[in-house]
Length: 80
Image (cartoon, rainbow, N blue to C red; front, side, top):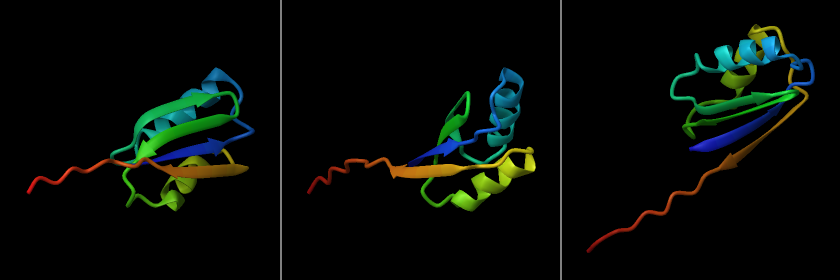
């Protein structure tokens, strides 16, 4: 999984935050979606394109000023 943190300066009101949250909810396997004034974050499978997220937000009528992506490391234990 990866975590995206997105800066959306034009998303200030609770109505705008609800619109962006609803748009992000349409992305397959998106989870832990949070929105607050000017920013959003969500978790996605690693194979999900960041461009899909950007396009979804822009289609909802908002622009992104910046975003970052962090990979969540999963510890795997092998038994022999």
